[in-house]
Image (cartoon, rainbow, N blue to C red):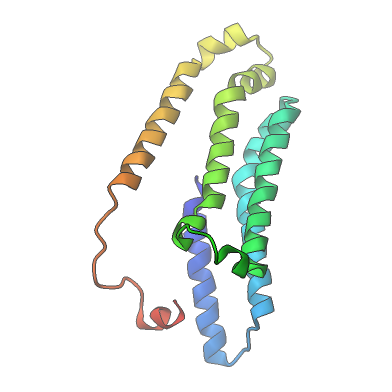
Length: 178
């Protein structure tokens, strides 16, 4: 969730590098591009899930570690599949713009599941207190209500999309790439 600004910065950096490479006459093959995209996806996935995996590991919660690791592996596998076997997705009835959201939804779903399910136990183990004492420190209803508010906010944003302006926010050089 916090990775969105990093992804935007990475995308902008990739576009800037591509423009500079094109200007300097550096040839970029399709294989190099796919490997860079796959490496970026691996790094972003690791960055998104490493913090939660660390806390689950510290608390001795191997089930949460397994869930988060499996979600990360599925995101990387989805990216690999989309990069190297794109024709397999051509026959689906779903819009490609919706298929792009699958890795993000998987990471968010795994994080919300684990946080709502196991956060109280993690904090109790890390602080060395009982679950009852931990309830005084962090009432879990606040975590559950925050999750519901987040999901409601996402639902409102998904149901009422913004009107797109006709002007592009990209520079003329960037439009040529996109």
